[in-house]
Image (cartoon, rainbow, N blue to C red; front, side):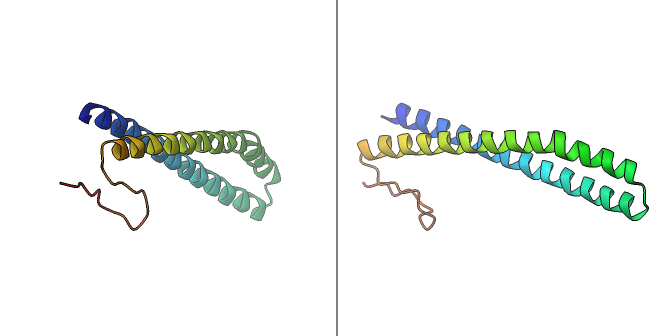
Amino acid sequence: MNTEMFKAFKELEYAVEKVEFIKEEINRLNQVTKDLSEKIKEYRKNEDNNEANAISTVVIDIVKIENDNLFKKMNEALEEFKQKAQRFENICFFNGISLQFGLSDKVIKFDK
């Protein structure tokens, strides 16, 4: 009983870590895009269109592709998380432990 529950919990923990890692990567990429956009504005303000166009090409070609990739990975990671959470919830239910993943529920209640 406990071994299976702990195994399911570890799998759930790994899925959460994966989602958080991808979330951090998306935030990092968004920050890079924001910084590059500021550079483009500066170059356009200084009428250096060649530099601005070069950076725009990088943003469009590379960053957009990477962003699309990360969002695809995020959707897959969230789906995996849902499956692991459901598995953990089912194992807990099978062992008589009431468990809900609601936002207001912060504590797992163990019946004596």
